[in-house]
Image 1 (cartoon, rainbow, N blue to C red):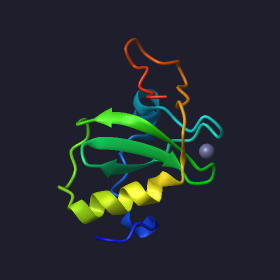
Image 2 (cartoon, rainbow, N blue to C red; image 1 turned 120 degrees about the vertical axis):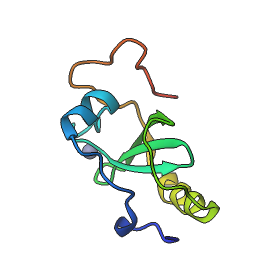
Image 3 (spheres, helix red, strand yellow; image 1 turned 60 degrees about the horizontal axis):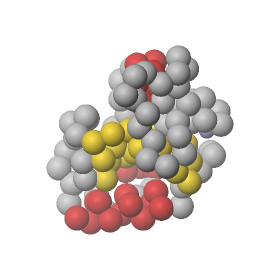
Image 4 (cartoon, helix red, strand yellow; image 1 turned 60 degrees about the vertical axis):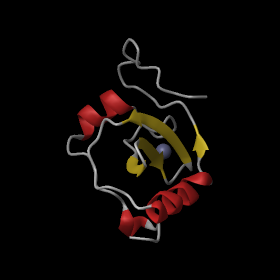
Length: 100
Ligand SMILES: [Zn+2]
């Protein structure tokens, strides 16, 4: 896996409801983001609105990534603007995950 187009998306989380509640959603359209990993960091992004938000580190098990995978994903997400995600029920305590 070396390119970073949509065919390389690294798996969707199963329950969107839990995903949004826990990881937040796109602040523009309030839809759950797609997920990519950069090393141990989980990034969600909305392709339509060109935004991304950090979902935490080491929370989601995924296949080990090569340095090329990490670089390709980082390149792909570089053009997205980092934002604070939308939480349908508001952020939980200690869940202000944004790094802005
Ligand atoms: Zn959106």
